[in-house]
Length: 305
Image (cartoon, rainbow, N blue to C red):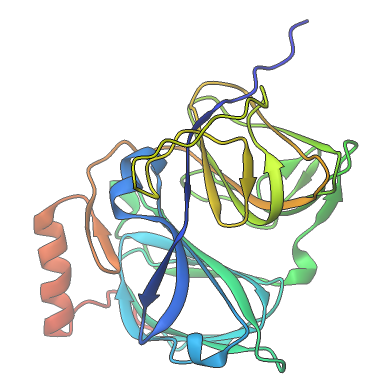
């Protein structure tokens, strides 16, 4: 029997500093012009600070339509409220999987920890045309419901969405069939994970460093002057995005003297046109214009409490 082919790296780049919301300092891993490469994913932000001034102004009331927003908190609290009357606190280890669908207006206000720390991620995933106007919904996933699995190779994996062996994560029945894993790999270990043919797969390095290319070839970075356009470097450090080639049946990550922690995300590409402005993502400019016209007219919300 032949071993499943491991995916090679297509491209790597570093996240960049950004200022969003009412003045939240964060690191943007990807967004906007990278979208065709990362379909169905649209944006990934990492917010991490020990200074309340970096995040406390938060993300006041704003609309979403046509996408899902996935908030994963590692430290500190995030308070949220919405136009349907929902409210709550996303605590360390929790995930909020929000399907905006036909439209929702909400706010997310980072509170931090008693020590002032705030650390988490927000991922945006596109919805296919047939689902863009579906009823909004929330999946509030508490830390205690997310299984942590120790693999035979030595990794510890929190399974938010997807599967390791026979263990499945709590988030299921998502239209883009995503996988979302939080992987911690000690020094000198290997992590191998099957991925579906043709699915988009990327890793985001949270801490430490690891080798994400199966050949472990030390590719040199290309001096283009752009943080978004580099040749693959297999020894990837904190803040790096690793985008995999679409060919191959597994992802293989190894470590040397240092451990690594990374998010591994996969999903089925939609292969549909994207019309995107701010927090609203549709398929055509006309649909986008209609959404903002409805927001101005007060008819944006289709589903009432």
